[in-house]
Amino acid sequence: MNGASLLDRVRPLLPALRERAPETEATRRLPEATVKDLLESGLLRALQPARWGGLEAEPLAFYEAAAEIATVCASTAWCLGVVGVHDWQLALFPEEAQDAVWKDDPTTRVSSSYAPTGRVTPVDGGYRLEGTWSFSSGCDFCEWVFLGGLLPRDGGVEMRTFLLPRRDYRIDDNWHVMGLAGSGSKNIVVEDAFVPEAFTHSFAEAFAGRSPGQAVNPGPLYRLPFGCVFASALVPPALGAARGAVEEALRQVKGRVSAGDGRKAAEDPAVLARFSEAANLVDAGWETLASAWRELQETARRGEAMPLPLRARTRSVGAQAVDWAVEATLLVFQAAGSRAIFTDNPLQRALRDVMAARAHFINNVDRSGPLRARGELDALEGEFFL
Image (cartoon, rainbow, N blue to C red; front, side, top):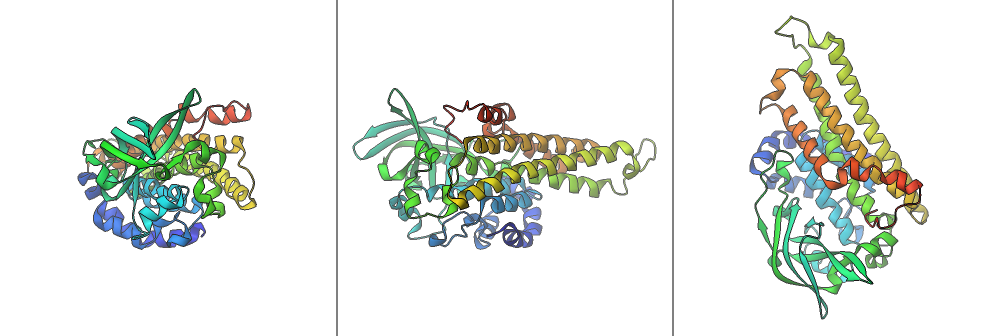
């Protein structure tokens, strides 16, 4: 499925999502009506295998859809990106895990918290988990969760994802934040839960392109690198919010006259320069990300191995694009005048949302930016999240 087909599903939703944006932020979670819209439109199942009723769309089309939603509500786009990608990862799990989640209801949803902050103990037949995992976006409307954990392996550690049903964890509502408030990225608390071996997914297997789920989901979509698919889903909410901020600020500037000197804002060269620079930054961010993804998707279609330099480049340009999104939003916020600071002005929410997106460790350009150079220098040892 191409980008145009998914965008056709997005555009009818935008007026309602724009209207619900203040409610989404105030309640610190997606409204039920929004979850219903994302499900009924198929957007939340865009990366789910067709054999489970999903669209099995290409990631670039999915990212474009998320960016379009972010023009009116970045929190909704963030949840769509994160939770939507989980359908893709679940397709890489052993078939037993896929059956457990989707057999009775293929629309069942999974949230996540990958940072390995809890304790994992190997036991007969699987593992026992306990502890607290943070930043589980969209957890309120999900019935399962992916949790990251570390296991000792050959003198080092192995990173795995562990799949747990809702009965095995509780949600701690600690989500009181200045940006992406509507994403509901709360804590997941596990007291003591058993996870069977078949309900785990090895990052090493994902990195090598040898996930067990590929036996039943052999399409090109499921041959793409895990690190790139997930990491890139965190970029469109920032880029889309920045583009929405540029469009909103332009609407507000039209007809605005400075109270100080009576000058029309739309004729002020400094204002025009800021808008042009902001729009260019957003366009550049999207095109660099899209260019990398076109190469990844074509490589998958050919059935070839994913080159590490391309994977590193994809991660690097994604973080750079988010940095540009922050810069672009700040430019138009400053150009929009004093009305932009009012809490009912969507510009201030867009600025807070892109800054929150930039705070994620994947979107940190200081961390992810150097990956491209390291890839070209063949110095990526130990980078399993590619």
